[in-house]
Length: 201
Length: 356
Image (tube, rainbow over all chains, first blue to last red; front, side):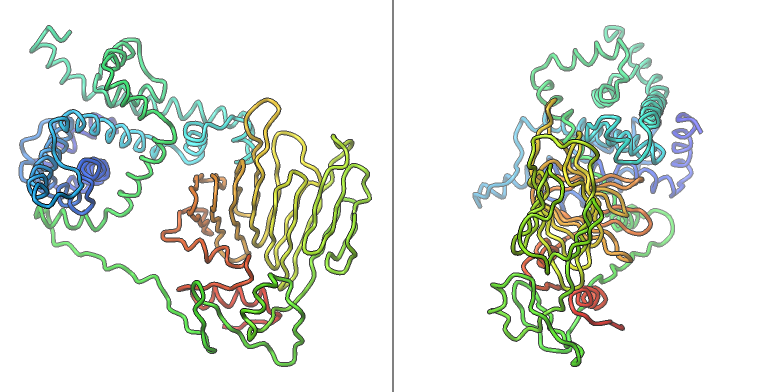
């Protein structure tokens, strides 16, 4: 199944109230959103509550989404706003109690965007790595994260150096394929943006 | 073309940036704040650690998903799985004294003799009423094929090889170079401990190994080449000395077991791999890479990994590091362990057969 077909299945599923779509989107985005919220406000329980609430809001509006990037943007913006509200509320509280904790300040907007980028980079990397076949993934992880050389990997895994090189090449070409698939979906939106504002070109 | 910063960064990391994308990334990075953020993000250690955090969240998300479905009133009714209690409390027949945890007393078969314990003598005073473990000797199989009983041989040099010495002193065996570079083929020794025996071994690079009962280590008499490799069965505690490679960097020390291998450069850790039980590695200090042919995991100090029979390597939640290495002080430590675990450890130390 191509990325395009997969994404359009999600959108039609939403319109038909298919609960499996909820599960799928939850599985895809919950860890990154929870991570994002937790880093913003520093409270695990509250972060979970906020993200669950975000998914609930999303499901209420499920018919209004046209693309997956739309959905993704909604999830992050809703979570971010809820976090800011929480921090503002906490700031009010702590003015009286003088506690040291994360509170809202104007710089938060920028930090939140960077945190969102970080959450997405982590999510995307992990997602692509998970798709790799087992041996291939192992070789990739040892190369990428542990920065081992091919002969060291060959020794650890009891395989030949040639096999290591092949698996490495395979991993990179697979990752490239996964990453390129995403472009197909983003393209219409970017084109749309450019048409609306040629200055962006 | 996709110009979201997150997609550009992921492509940068996997070397998939096109020319135009490279230009966009540079544009993004021309902002000092973005540049700083980017540099922190692309650090491999940081990436690894943060990805692991998201994976950890994902692993525990079933309950959250059920809650989310209820909250959003999605589809059919939802059941929440109760958590299984993973702790089996164990009460020993004899009284149990709590010292840093739990010390188990055991009744020996009355017909058996008990020999003097080989383990830490300072503990003898404290645990006067303890029953002493059985004593079967440690055997050293040298590269030249001799089987030496470590406990019965005199102190001194056991080596017949001019290149190095095998010094036996009270309580330890030390391998060391006599010459700068060994000539000829490198031989391997195997040290095997019996029931109730512990042995302290110092390898030719200064790394220290403490073998627990019924364990063995196979090692080259002298380390040459770019790696130091040993093979272990049973249980051993390692204090690895850091060694530099002539071309730069550190020489790795690799412990191979039936389950996979453990790779370090200078560190302290405990390996437990008794047959029929999952393999456990506990890290005290430094950094360790644990792997089998399917999976790889990096441990931080205080962490313990467990390799199950179906080839999974997992981090053990709330591992009790003290308990894992308590055997080195001659004290048995069992906290919330199952009766099976306790009796297995006991059987290794006391010359008894356990039926449970």
